[in-house]
Length: 256
Image 1 (cartoon, rainbow, N blue to C red):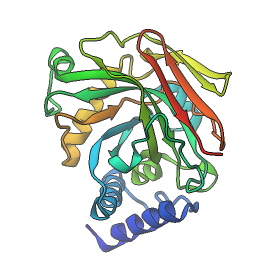
Image 2 (image 1 turned 180 degrees about the vertical axis):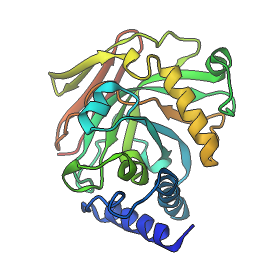
Image 3 (image 1 turned 135 degrees about the vertical axis):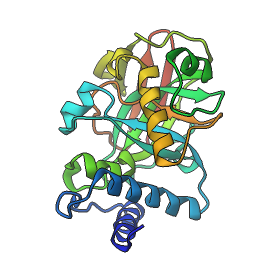
């Protein structure tokens, strides 16, 4: 990796550790998509070097709602580590985060390795289980303003995630009604068709990206298939609840 890309990775990693926002830099420095993904990988590798373990992938901007909210035109991916996984009964401290938001998502757990070249049937057969999930996203960019390249470099705004109960595959997740609550207030609603038409279509995009980026998806990996609705800001002391008709509920507690 070029020395300047490594410096960008250190810059982003330090911003996340300190909980401080930085100015978007990708276009200003003429970065390419390949540069942005190289920075992303270096950011994640810094976390792994500190003892974290990669546990899966998160898809970003797989829905029209999220692309419109953030002004981007195509999906991307980032990576999940064990330090991002949140227990449903353990309050998440928002203090280290900058401007956290919550997204309801369909989570997938793989039972087989993927190459990225699977047919639709083979992809479905590779899934071991599905679960309702909430992802907490937190861009390191100032005022949550960034373009696609900045977001890629920033590991697709990854911060934390929680899943509800897992349901063994096969399970119909193609057209589920979804509602997102902050405490008891309904703030967003949509359907799982929002993510590339079907969560498995979003998984296919992720598998191809993972293969291209050199971290192919493996059995046991968890994949968050992308935010179904817009992502509202969350505050300390709130309970976030994502209800999926048929799939169940994911709940995230935030510390006061």
